[in-house]
Image 1 (tube, helix red, strand yellow):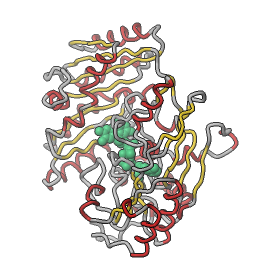
Image 2 (spheres, rainbow, N blue to C red):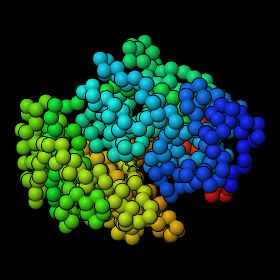
Image 3 (cartoon, rainbow, N blue to C red):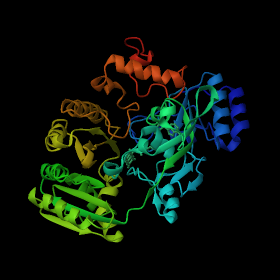
Image 4 (cartoon, rainbow, N blue to C red):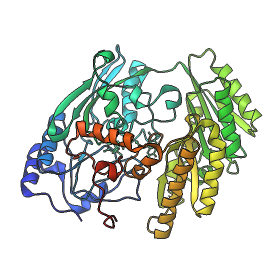
Length: 477
Ligand SMILES: Cc1cc2nc3c(=O)[nH]c(=O)nc-3n(C[C@H](O)[C@H](O)[C@H](O)COP(=O)(O)OP(=O)(O)OC[C@H]3O[C@@H](n4cnc5c(N)ncnc54)[C@H](O)[C@@H]3O)c2cc1C
């Protein structure tokens, strides 16, 4: 249970953002008690919703002067508990900072506030023949600020790369309200340290991004989408390896398994995938028209060679959207199966996909858990989705143990503990699986440069021992 904010702090915050943009009522704070990782819930002490860099700076100055931790928050779609509050912390949300400040079509750049929804930027760039490439599957909801903090990926990042490739400059509010500008599209990368590179992916632990400049890309001339239907996940996994193995580079390669297909087909999102299929593989190519059909032919041949029972192909937007539907609506459809969903995130070398998928299925059986797989197969980024009811404490315990084994398995085959959802609180204690004490200490030192008093998003990313805040033996919950 958190304590109320001191009256002087409440007065100062109201004066900065206006009475309506400071939330302290317990029934309204419930909305902010978790992010997309619903297994963890902590209501914050308060939520502040500033509207500009200046307001964020003043809010952070007031809170840090009172030694109160700040938890930055975008749309709260994060899946690693990154925006989870601490009981004594205050959430600073970017929901009101949602302006697209400039589309500079000639230089293919956009400048936005951090609360802009990812898909809105692409809509705004479309009349200029441009779009924003990183496309998390949550793109209709998640914010650019959250994308920057998580260095987010998405289906098309196989070909186009993740957020860090697109961010050219940032305005950032640091500890005690200091405002700094990092990078700049025209800046000579050799003339300065790459602080933008350091900030992107810092998961709200360094400061709050209040203005973001990103590169835009020209919309591709043509697109071809294939949907391959397979009897087994291994066969679909082999098709992925074989498509990449012959030198093709699709824009996206995504797999959904039978449990997911069944959930989607039983829901309002039904996409027409055969419900007895072991797996469906979406392969998409984009670029100049010349060559697209040839690439699609070669990918189709790989699918057939690996045992696809059917391959559909689409070139028109409506047909493409229909083929994608089963993938795009997968998470929503899973709400039919269980009240809670833990979307795990790990990467493995692509060639190990078939074997790892079999072992994850075995883990599901051993722990008596429903696990549905929907993932970015092209870059080996797995998302085993564990379905559960958090009110069933025994099941919750099995979810945690199975998650840990999945992480250990992915590391064992040469992968790592997150592909795109970040470490947050969920993976914090798995960090030593992939980083030694010296590497963790270097990360802690980098955080201290931006946040010397540890007042931004405490308890996240770095194990508590590395942060020097590990509770005494027996004191941990
Ligand atoms: C259905 C579904 C599908 C998803 N698919 C993908 C996917 O394909 N790829 C992918 O990468 N992720 C995916 N995600 C995860 C999530 O959407 C991304 O991590 C996204 O970037 C989070 O954005 P957000 O605005 O919701 O951030 P939040 O969840 O609010 O915050 C995420 C982190 O960013 C920090 N933060 C937020 N705003 C700022 C800011 N302005 N400055 C500094 N720190 C900040 C927070 O402190 C927190 O640590 C998915 C989530 C869901 C629910």
